[in-house]
Image (cartoon, rainbow, N blue to C red):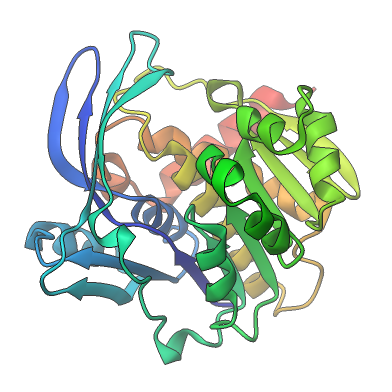
Length: 309
C-alpha cells in the first residue's frame, strides 16, 4: 500500500536558548518522509532550487525507503528558507524570516509512477494546490491534509472545498478555533467533521493531541522527552509516523479492512507521537538518521505502559 507526501523541502536556521544551527535541512515533506520511512516505503513530492546542497540530497538518500524521484530541483530557482528563534520554554517561537522562493512558483510535478499511491498526505500549503494534487492520485484510499492559520485567513473557501475530499485533517488547537470559531478543541473538531473529514487530529504540542473521529474521541499525551534540542519538524514527524503506521497496517492485512477506523487511527497516532519524540532530540534529521526501528518499538511499548490504566 503505497504512501506519498506532498510538501516542502527547505533550508532552516534555528536558534534555541542553548544553540544555533544555520542552514540545515528542513521542510514538511522532509520530516514526514524520514519519520514514515521507519514503517515502509514513502514517496516524496517537493520542489527545491539549484542552491539545494548536495549534502541534503545525500541525507535523504541515506533513508533507504524514501523515494526521491518526486524531488524536483529547478535551475534558476532558490530553495524555500526559514529562520526561527525559540523561547526559553522551547514551545513558543518567533519567525525571523521566511523566504518563499520556489514556493511562490508552480508546484512540483507528480511523477507518473506515483499515480498508484493509495495513502496520501497533503503537507501544509495552499489548499488550492492541495486539491490539485489529488487528481494525480486516482487510486487513493486514504487522504489526510495539514493546514495552518494563513490558509484559513486567506483561502478559506478553497480549504472548505478540500475538506469535502479528504478523510482526515491535522491542525493545531489555535487553527481549529480560527476555522470554526469554537474555543473548545473537541467542539471545534466536531464542527470540522461536519465539513467533510472522517476524523480530525488536533495537535497540542507538548500536551499531546486529540483525535475526534466520527466513531469516537481519544486524547493522547505527548511522550515525556527529557532531552529537547529542537522542536522544529515535530508536527511533520508526528504526521509521518501516523501515516506510515496506517500504510503498514494495510500491508499487514493485505489491503483488507478499514484503515481509517477509530481504533486503527488511534494506534497510528501513538506511533506518530513516539516518532516525533525522537525528532526533537536533535537539530534537523540528525536523531532520526541514527535511529533504528527497534528503538521506536521499544519507546512505543514504554509509552503504552505509561498510559495503561
